[in-house]
Amino acid sequence: VICNFVQRYNRFRKMSMSDPIDAIIPLPVEGSGEANYDVVVSGAGPVGLLLGCYLAHQGLRVALVDPHLTTGVVSKAVGTMPRSFEVMDRVMDAGSLYASGRRLRSARFGSEGSWIGVVNISPAESRFQPTLVGQNIVEEHLARRYAELGGVIFRAARVKSIVEDELGVTVGVERFVYVRPPAVAPPLPEALTRVASTALKAKYAVGCDGKNSKVRECLGLGYEGHEYPQMFFLADVELEEGEIEAEGWDVAGGNGVLQADGSFFLFMHIQSNIFRTYYCATDMKTEDCTEEFLRALWEKHVPGGFPTKIKRFDRPQVFSVSCRIVTSYSSVVGRVFLAGDAAHCHSPAGGQGMNTGLQDAANLGWKLARAIRSGDASVAGSLLTYEKERRPIAEWVL
Image (tube, rainbow, N blue to C red; front, side, top):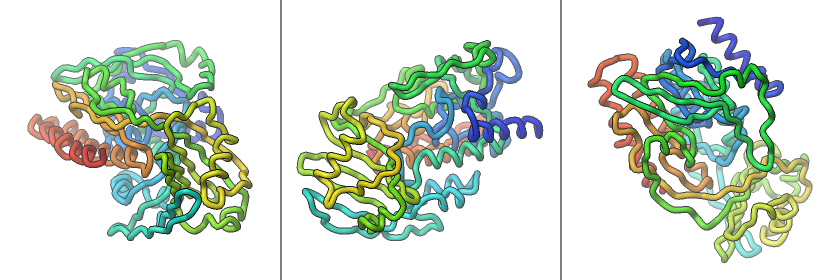
């Protein structure tokens, strides 16, 4: 057990310091001991990682399956709420994550060329407060803790099928690398492609694999709602030292500019000299979304303009937004569950999806652990309360 822990922790350190491919582990041979787990989770974003931490913290064998090469690749959310810190603090030192962000004390709003005013954020009745910390940072802290707990992640792999019965699930997994276009996936070494597909056995499976969830597709569940006509253009912008203060952008942690046509800009001061910026509008073309395009819009619409001395323009992403909820949070047999965006999808503004998903994971995690550790069918019945408790929250957010 100690050897396995050391090996997995070293993989995480290696992943953090060098080529992420070096940290990827081979898929296990079907039917081998390494292909048997208590829970298999599809998705190693913040929701899947927190769920993995809850289960591994209880001594259960957990495997996460994720097509990305490393953690923190996709980062849309920026606001982490007090309750999310509280549920993470049960299985990790959430204080260090909290300290890495910037407390959101106020938000400034403007429109049509002028700043309207500043809204102060009231303190929460918690030792944690609303904090601007990027989803990528949340993932890094959770991934580190999951590795410390001895959790397994099969990266550069995806779930392709799920079959369940009264005793458990069989999860089909295949080697697959996802990178955001126009990037091209790098070739994997032969040691990682030798086993191109396999089947993992588990007592339960959970889909934390986003709004295009393969697990939800395998269950044949509906995803009711609609697509928003707007598109989001997101980028992390690092300003030169002293630029924030010199240009008066230290007034508030959050800054929003609303336009009469329904478009808007958000500038969230997440760390040191870094802002996570959002532009939301209809009829936006992906090919037009460049740094020059965004700079021109800032100059035209943001009161006084956004600071121009930019040191780094990083993580540009363009994505559509949905407002949807799944028809059921679990399978008919009750061996497969959904959490996070796989169950409900919201606008990324305000971190609604990430915060709701993290709290899904906390609710489901302790219930799964209790059901598995007890082996009592009556205790397993408590899993039915997961949807009863979490669906109303998602519906309220929607």
